[in-house]
Amino acid sequence: DKGAYPFYMLKEVDEQPAVLRRLLQNYQGDDQQFAFEADMMKTLLASDRVYIVACGTSYNAGWIGRSLFEKLAKIPTEVHLASEFAYDLPLLSEKPFFVFLTQSGETADSRQALVKVNELNYPSLTITNVKGSTLSREASFTLLLHAGPEIAVASTKAYTAQITLMAMLADALRAAKGFEASFDMERELSLVASIMESILAEKAEIKAWIDANLMETRNAFYIGRTLDYYVSMEAALKLKEISYIQTEAFAAGELKHGTIALIEEGTPVIALVSEETVGAHTRGNVEEVKARGANAIVISMQDVAREGDTFVIPKVETALSPLVMVVVTQLLAYYTALGRGLDVDKPRNLAKSVTVE
Ligand code: F6R
Image (cartoon, rainbow, N blue to C red; front, side, top):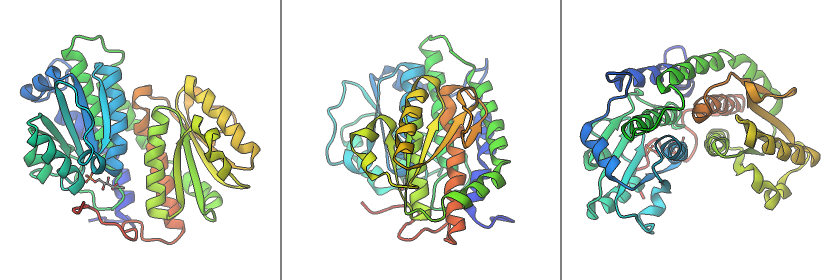
């Protein structure tokens, strides 16, 4: 039931802090460690490479997972589109471990890839929101997202739940491998939940800005580097699928290698800047598109914010920045579709669960 909400999407966006806290609780172990099934941890630790396989929003979450597994647990990780993977298997390592990210647990492309993995007898984990779903039954292990039913076609809370779960798993793997923690994962995730709440409290401001800037445009771009680029991929998918504005995400440095030709007077270019080192370069790219007439919009994090940024988000640990940056972009997509009078929960041509290849 969506209660007082006009659309499920907004309700589900609002639920994210609670989902995050529920995940923290559900995977809480003793001694300030996250608890995961011993057999799964053993299998994962014995593997030499993780292959994340998924579609759509879940695939976009996979890129953040890759960064977490590699940076925190030092496990080489690749991300693959399920629809490509099943038909052009990458050269696999000696001891691969497969992670299937799927909100519904029923996506045919992902299932096809899992069938392949099972034929080859490799271990797998399905991270899903639906208990007893096909991919959950057919994988060696399952982890549940506990996000509650996601009704809106545009996935929101499943994305942040997947990233949260992978952050906890990466932290558990790090601890199991005896690496020092660079930050307290539990404390930082709790902080993320609070900051999500503070962003969600700014809806009116975000809506007003969107009404003034995104109502007329036919196309838009998201740019960022590293984690901000991966969030851009998700932000662009969200905006295009519910508002029908053609939106593309680019690694900021790639703009000058071709895409900048598309920038016209007034083209919205939304830059995500959550980190100093790469952020400075992204800001350079913002200047380049501005010089060509773009309507540049910067969403930044407090410690790297500059005068004139459109939205500034309170600081969180860099590795977890996608969890908060994405919330602004979800609201941006929501209010754009709403302002255009569209059916936010049921965009044209799309189904919630894609059960055909
Ligand atoms: C976009 C969206 C889709 C799904 C994709 C995979 O908002 O919802 O891109 O993410 O179809 O679905 P699952 O995660 O159920 O496998």
